[in-house]
Amino acid sequence: MHGLPEEVKFCRRCVVSNQRPSSTVEFKNDSLKKETIEFDKDGVCSACAYHDLKYKEINWDQRENELLTLLEKYRSPNREFDVIVPGSGGKDSFYISHILKNKYGMTPLTVTWPPHMYTDIGRKNFDAWLQSGFSNITYSPNQDFHRKLTKAAFENLCHPFQPFILGQKQVGVKIAKAMGIDLVFYGESQAEGGTNIREGMQPMMLPKYFTAPSNEIKRLPLGGVTVEEWLQQGFTLADLDPYIPTDADQFRSAGIEVHYLGYYHCWRPQDHYYYAVENGNFNPNPERTEGTYSKYASLDDKIDGFHYYTTYIKFGIGRATYDAAQEIRNGHLTREEGVRLVHKYDGEFPKRYMAEFLEYCDLTMDKFNRIIDENRSPNLWEKADQEHSRWELKHKVW
Ligand SMILES: [Zn+2]
Image (cartoon, rainbow, N blue to C red; front, side, top):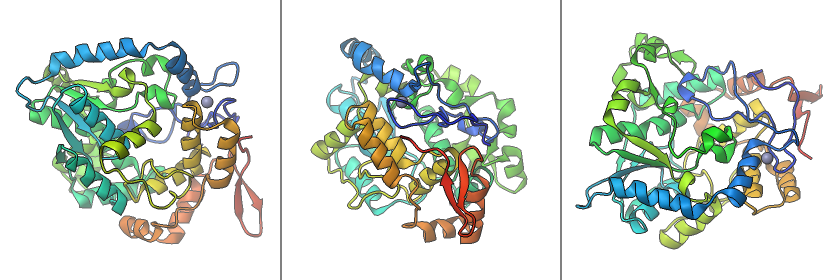
């Protein structure tokens, strides 16, 4: 199911399995075929292979020189906006915008594709971000469409977070184009999570993630429904604008460049957290985040927990696995500690915001459970106990 490899293997270095999809071109995601991360002959995943390069091979001083050359070309001498930093005000976007401004003398305009439903802590961190000295454009979409798209993405793809990902990838270029700013900086390079290393070792985001030829637009599936079908339902291209890619020709002639800071700076999410606490008023979650052990990552949207719960159902990979794999690769956890944390927290049921999620998507609990169960791939799940219909993963990391 979901186009996943039949045989389940776990990386020998971190805790991720070969069921993890690599970066998806989200506006083409119809759930039929997923590319998954590569494993080498020694059973090591491509994200861990990249981290070998990151800590042993890549010359980060040289990469910083490349960054200086790039910024020299775009820096505005009059301190007008010269770079777009998309983000929500979490630790990573705080870090990117803050060092571009304070270390490299750039003048960032921050751009936000807002969460479906801000958590209190997410809203506070967003405010603290701007209070630390940034201007911001927030692209708030048509909420009627956003809600219907979220419902469709959950029902058709078991992917309620898709509307957020779609907009987050598009919003940088859309605002850059509208404002006449030629440089956009996103955060982590695709290689961090295991997209093939060749693609991940490039400084720029590939245009396939945010552009398409204009004659393809109407056929693109959003939430499993084509653009054409959404238009037939009475929505307009204006309603759909933030979710659909920029016309490829227009992008080329606009001369905009979209870079990853993670290509130029050794990317360590935990360090960004400490940086954001020291240099701003960043707050961790006062309580542990459901489904994991951490308190500092991905905590601004009430939908986040449902995103990781659905990846646990579809791929057997929940939030604790993502967090632990990343922290093992960056040397903050041993593999043994990671395995214990995955056993303890992965797949924890997201009950904190369940009532709000059901109301937001206009769903009943029964319908929610039915969609969840329909998306359990048979190579991953079995009924451990017929009477209580309790599902269990067939393969656990060990
Ligand atoms: Zn690995």
